[in-house]
Image (cartoon, rainbow, N blue to C red; front, side, top):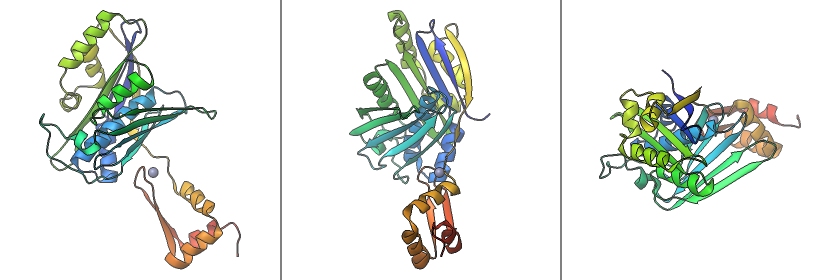
Length: 292
Ligand SMILES: [Zn+2]
């Protein structure tokens, strides 16, 4: 089955919950950017959380997440929207370290433990929301937890995990977000905290075949959970040859002439998906606004 996420509530609407299986999505990102294991996990966790944050938006709204630590992978950027489409990249994809003391991919070492996590939401009608917090652990999930609590004032728990095969392909990837709304009872919060502390890592749950529904049942308890919606999730970039053409046109005729004379064409690569676009001298000639 392809990747998807679910939106749910629990405890009479006082808890909002999201869970996603993102294995294929993260594998697509890995394949496109040729990330090595630790970088795959860092980028994959960020993309996974971004997919769920996108699902919190309405209609055509979208958001951009930027995780900018002082570690060797450099900034990680991910975009998400309300349709389950997500894309992202990592500045330095060829980063891989030994497993950390817990036997997990050492994401904090790759991302770094100093820096910032920022979120920009494009809510249409020129309305933007921007939030930024310092990186607190570099493990990604904890950093988003800190973001929700401190930037959006919503007590939350965020989990995201990626397991990588020996050949560097993605074995399993997934995540969850639990958010406590005003009016939640102390008993509810205590119960959730205990379950979160005792649940196996999300990536192992996905590897073992648990669906997003089953993961939320484990986190919340089947008797409390109310699932509202299921949404397919996929890596999808909005770039196209036409968009690159428009970007080239905006450079102006002189610049285009230089490309024709000096390079005999042009090549552009999309940061987000690593797609390459080639333009021959003839194609460039047609992009000029003033025909000669
Ligand atoms: Zn692209």
